[in-house]
Image (cartoon, rainbow, N blue to C red; front, side, top):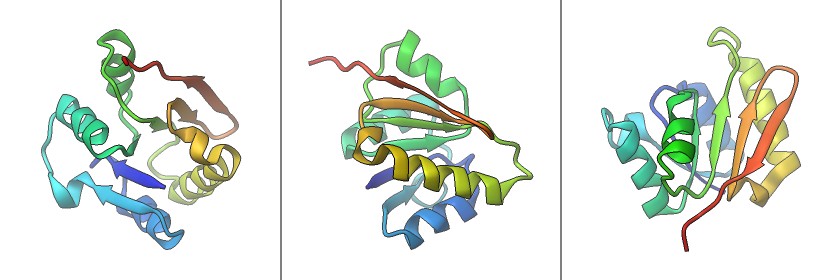
Length: 120
């Protein structure tokens, strides 16, 4: 799967995705300091699912109607890296390619999911 990982996400999650064989671009390595709008544009241009811990992307996608291939928001405390890795792996197993065209919120005890709309 093709991922664009926001720079607010810790490097251990990037490493875990790469170990699982995913194609991962990490903003912190590739283009640190991009605005949220530019990150969304980058994900759309590269056809990558955006992985973030920043709630502001929801506003860009839903209120400002920016197009993005998929958005995964992790809402687990920063001190709990191992749980983040575990829950992300479970989400990937559960949703697979359906993560494209989906907004998924990963929490400690549940997933919240909805389809994204895209302008054609």
